Image (cartoon, rainbow, N blue to C red; front, top):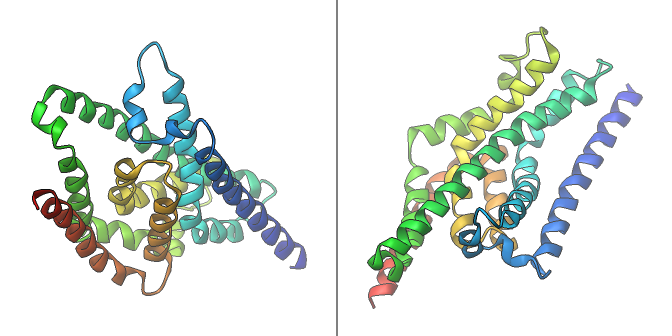
Length: 253
């Protein structure tokens, strides 16, 4: 029993160290000459001849996922570790679960990056949109706020808030390696369904903005893990919609 507790604590310490390293790396990156590669506007500089910016974006997005999203899924990872602690390959299984979760968010980052490039291309072709780029920011805020009230948002949030039943329905003792990855992947899908609109805001405020990362990461962690977290969704939605409306009003004043 004591050996199992020691292994569990060691695993949590290592995971916490990994998350802390991601935050420190992002903070250092933000104060380096390469900080512009995390900014929203720098994404438009990516060309076929200069793929460095794309590489930097993927690296930065990976650090963001480790820093912001991995902490929100710690209850699931810890519970899975407890369930599989008697297996000799329990570390591998936990690693596969984490990998499945991260794959979903990495794919989302690449897709949104491509969409962001498309928006910039469209903005350059449409003069009105180019001179009124505030519309994109305001629209993103309203979209993120409106999504907070959708049935899909609450369905995915409820899945994220019930790690025991989530694992119990998917862990049958068959192919352990495949099932571990699948649990992480499925959880990533529901987590994406719950939080994609909030992560989309990062493209509007700058993907490397540490303050916004801390705020949004904290909000998503509370929503998913605190007993009263579900009640936060509606006020957050109203706040985001109100912020989008305020941006619009200020522009016309």
